[in-house]
Length: 410
Image 1 (cartoon, helix red, strand yellow):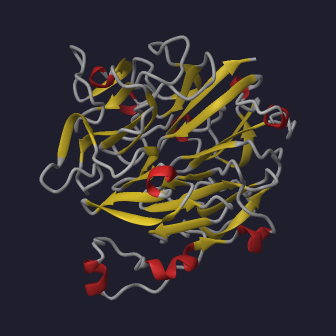
Image 2: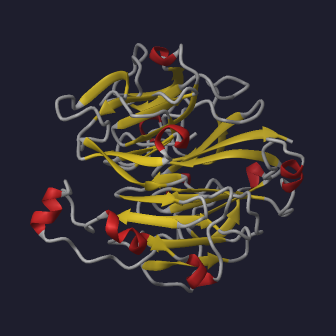
């Protein structure tokens, strides 16, 4: 499950019936513009609200979509009386014969991944993010993207997208569909796209970052800018680094050097917002870096720097290596639990049951209800979302200014 945007990156939701291992419901809160919350209105909500038009038992399989549709990013026809957006979730009928296991969106483009590794795209391709080539700038209905192997993960930024291919078929390479054509990056285990940057994870927990670093969102020093001719030859239309395979080691973020620990493995967790990032470390601690204009790094009111260019620990929250994290424009969300090893018993028994996470924290800008706490004041450190106390949280996703949570009652 991942929220997305129809106005700017990550805003009007296109949600998937998620990968939960049982019955679950979706809650939403924050900015309701253009029906982003899926609650039959465009009003803001300051506390979690149940989305009424989704099935009672939300599991992987059928794709539902709502929010802005001016560019066709919902992949379905709007209901009578709806103009440019839909405030109520409805199935994407064109994918009714597919078993959808993941979906995401960014601005004007949406992506859906099937159980068999087929990747479907729909919406607009203003910067080539649909990957359909320069001759097809839009797809009002889902179209399958041609890839050299089955996809196992997909992520999208404002104007770019990335898909991770099956390692048995394609040696675990990451395929980027940007600048209208695919490009390969090294052997990787996972990835996430921010507004104009990308983070990718290796199996050993090494984190690589690339793209825009104007707000410190890469978590490392920028590499020398390519001369204009080389940048053009590389297909880059925006200022940034010259990314050549020979310099991949310089892309590595090193939280071990900054705070003595590495990104979590074997369950790596990173999240990217508009200009800030979050990561769960191997011991369950959480770090943040990048833009801190609204307190979205969670480092406290005494950290006054606008940008923090290195991973920095967030204190005052229970350490849990199974924690879930999500990042919006100027807010962040975390699901964790005071019992750090509550999920370890499942792993010891070889079970696939989801870890039990019963505490939800949020921080950053409170405008339009982004934090879900009912409060109107911004928070520079993590605060509990009271309405989710005691609920088992199995999925989190942030749009620019709203949040979705997949929950099961305990």
